[in-house]
Amino acid sequence: MKEYKILKQKVNLLKNTDEKFETQLNLLAREGWRVITAVTDQGNMGLKVILERDKNR
Image (cartoon, rainbow, N blue to C red; front, side, top):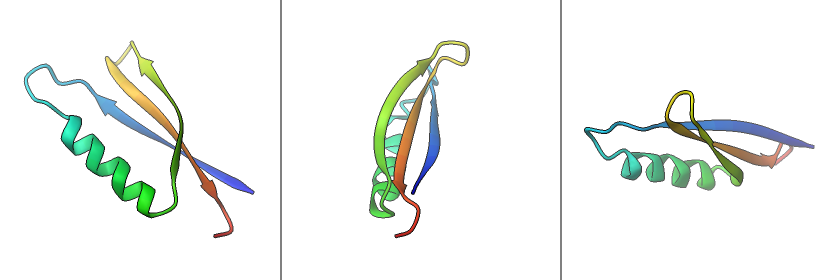
């Protein structure tokens, strides 16, 4: 069985948030999460990443 998580990155025109977002992804990867897909969230000017991992790890 799988479980899923949505990670959101908001775009901040005054500050680069890529490094913080990358750190979050790497921490989640260590917990067994893997990226399934990423989509732009045009309403909030951001990015949503869908993650998946085995529930019974």
